[in-house]
Length: 470
Ligand code: ASP
Image 1: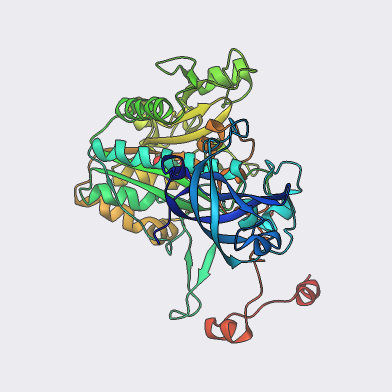
Image 2: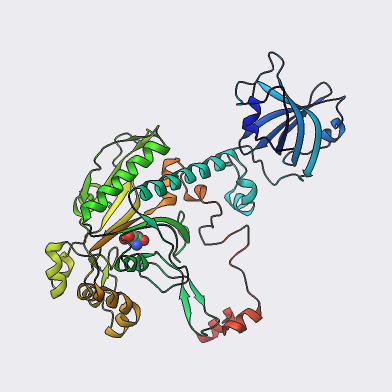
């Protein structure tokens, strides 16, 4: 018989239904077994009176087992209705019980919000942790946000295009994850820190409005709320100026909030714009939290931070980029870039979007002229040869007719977490890693077989060997 979702049972009084799910709770009361059955649409009460065929079987069930039940939907006797349950006016009188899989006792409670359980344990048994209502709702909202973003951008003429995961190093200020090549021994791919170069090359290709819900990977030192892999809403547009990208993104953020979390209030529209200088002198940070009432859980204070210096000196006294080496300077500073003068005063076209004190995205207008991009790498002290090997393809691409272009990327995990009032992005990522990059459920990273290493031409230098070398 066709399955009925639990949420639908309320409309089926007088009918026989087949409901499937997990045993949420079990209790016996006056020779009647009451079973709360849960599927991902809700909960319904199932009753097994002592005279019913499967009464004994029901008594031996355990919570969290999976079952299928055939039964008659009937109105609950008066005074036994449960106003806290969407299906609280009815119950299913069981006629047949099929046990799909009996559950042994779980390592923790999945009916609580989970905050009382150690995170290590939760991550080790993530597939159980995800059974809890709070996490289920987090992933439904995450889906609604992504779904809305896709629909909005499609409506605006964007096309979603996937870019490679096995690629070449692209500088985003972190270390690369690298993957050894078996067919080209001794050579490596890098996993993308962002689709930056590909999305720019798509502009050269004439894909004027690109976006992607893109997985990015950065090998950073352990930090409490960073993930080695995370998701960006990445976009790039041709023939645009800074204002165009900012206006579109502002509209998209406002519409997303309205659509997905209508109970939230945006403090100020249009979003205030603050220069980097002003942010630093007034708030001592370039991600100011502008909320007027920090106790209001529904208040969203967006702002743009702009006019960042393009370059800054690193510890060794050499120039490094503050955000993105592919950015263009402000038009009035292009000449300084080309002459490699007043380097510390060059302002970039970078714009960061900040929400309640968190940077949730950033982008810029790019250098679409090869000579200008080359100057950036020269200022960064990259030798000619290295510029050619690492970025020759970009420089060459720009010589075949490149549109002026710009884009942005949002940190989707952070945005979703903020809209859900979750403190950690791990609460909105299905299978997150620990702060030091381990997946406790799969137990990775893990060793690989010596055959695999041999095929790749890789030899592990043991800790002992390392010590000897030093
Ligand atoms: N590639 C940048 C980042 O990942 C975003 C951008 O400039 O579009 O932060």
